[in-house]
Length: 407
Image (cartoon, rainbow, N blue to C red; front, side, top):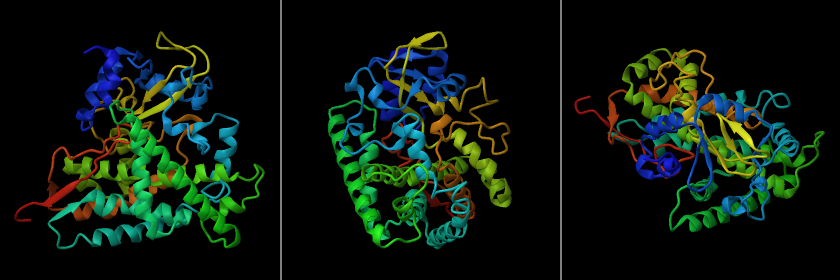
């Protein structure tokens, strides 16, 4: 099939369970212009260079054709800091990072270790005497959403609303064309605005009644970068809440699925939990939670592997393709929990690398340590499992496992 249809095929749900042959085709064809005018990049070297290139913008306002900017990015609520370039991106990111981790809050993430372990143990304790389990619904979703809500100060009883809004926002980012694309985008925009208003109101209550959570810290921060405006706070809190659990749900689920498919590795990690940090890094390479970075725009004509990507054109970095590039990784399609020199794109790269990475790593390590012993005697009930619709945030919608007869 022609290379200019690769994006259409990658985003086709029929290929969600195994997009990797398409990524191999992308690498073979080099930088390819698609029928919608966007450019796909899939080799490790090119992606790494572009992630660190100051000529590549994350601000959709630099797009030549504004009709190609997703509706979700055009609402009245300001974009989150990942949608800006430096120096504005740097200012907003530094404010958001102050209550989150080093150097200003160095112990916040590590202090969560006990809580995460307890929550994980409670969840797997509920598996006792059950013959069928949905790893997503029963474990991979409730763990990170509980953690991020506690971290931000969101009441647990509001989690169902958070989930509904999050699902709509993620669906609104979907790159798939179709009759319902505009409806998905409009619904996603409405959900983002509703979540922002909810978090803004919650933050307002923290002004007079602060507590030990990130919303209180963001409201009362008097650091050198100034205060967030109400709109900036709404956008930042929305990003932290969605990104703070969506990618981790996928990472835990993809990890459980990968290990069920590789029982020798599962047994090895179950018997030696000290190997878990390296295994999580390999999961981030082998089955990453984020496959595409669709919002990049050159600020000038840029040469990428002898192809000129014009100023203002949509540029899509296929991170999961770079993670399987045989020019960078030996036997890239082999899952190797002990892989060395594993500089993957699991958390992006450059100035926009995910600053929530330490929390996601910790949650996934502790989650899998708690989960693996409980997988003894279970097998996949569906192969492949049903996937979520998004080609960007890729992971199973359900991961149903069942007890092996006689176990």
